[in-house]
Image (tube, rainbow over all chains, first blue to last red; front, side, top):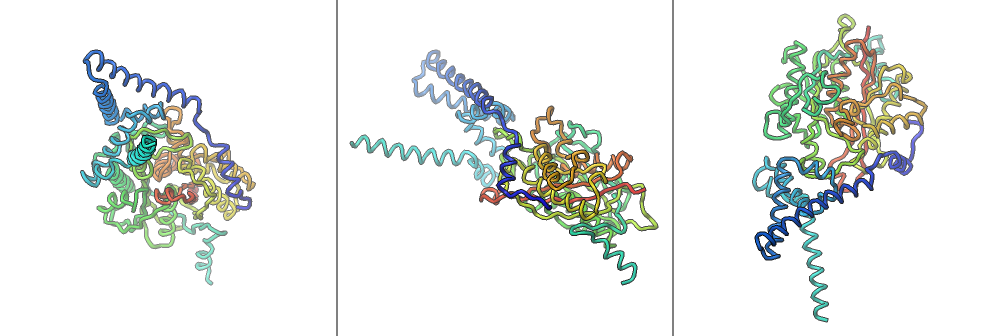
Length: 150
Length: 351
């Protein structure tokens, strides 16, 4: 071609004409969906402590287990995806998002076998969360320990 | 040089174009698509709409192969040409090492050239098919390409059930396979009733430094602009020479860029331009964001809709320009840019 934009000019132009999701709408949806998931967790917790007289720690475990189960079930029925599409971070940040990110690759790679399919691929998305979660907990624990020594 | 030789050498025109002495005919065409495409605006033009995303097989990849097999089989059956008379297949897809084409085509036992041009493969396959039969190396050859939404998402993005938000500039990979039986013609047997490939312009790799794999239209638009510009220059024609100038899968964003880039170069194609990615889905209804994409997108739109329009004389002459984004997950993760490539094929109904 005769007339060519340089890369920088072109990238700026592309940036300008590419449509974007509305940030306000995304935040609102995330607030609603994330809020509902947390509300559900609170309801489970309250029912466990008041109706079944669970210890607080046990009630928290039951709450996590039920939320993870629900998320995996919805993932299997391919219903978590539309929820995440609508809710964005509201659906991804709670424990349900983590469960979805573990269940989804397991379903996808089933065909590649137990070990090299499900086994290897199960944490392809959640892996970094676990790794950096462990690293950050270690650092936090270390700082806590130093402060306790002082 | 005698006259015959001169005529042959003169087939190379301008910088990148071949104008065929005996324009090859597209004898038959087949389009096999998935459910989503079957709910789109072009549904009535496709040969087969398969509701099962795995096409009766166990995985997306096996499903894609089955789709390729059906497309080639349908094209052969519709043409009435015996399989033994088909000398070569030119085929390719998006999956790593072309496994979609491999397992779909192995049982035909026809000599094969496996091609990779990302989503521009349909143009590459048709160009090579036309060059082969025009040169007299074969009477009949097949060009075929395919893509599968599940397979492409798995390879390039995330598992299907994983919840995430797609940017508005992202495209939706078409589940579909298009096959074409391309045949030699001669002045005695011009096969006027079929659409003919009169010239091809082969594209260069064009890199404008875009790194966003969720905005493929912006990656590929410069390549499309480059090859369309060169085609118009080489053939010394204006955009109005064509009823339609049809890009593969630039989507809404890429189409806007293409028109602007060509306008900067004194060619206005807005009136003639259409994009297969934009017309294969109803974006409002089907929520596909910027449009359809993938090798299958251009291939099934050509096999289903565009050739139908040419055969029924709605259009006389089109410039078909499938567009490809050249990346792998490795190149992308290592921070490389995403260059584009596009190939232009002139298809017309010669009276």
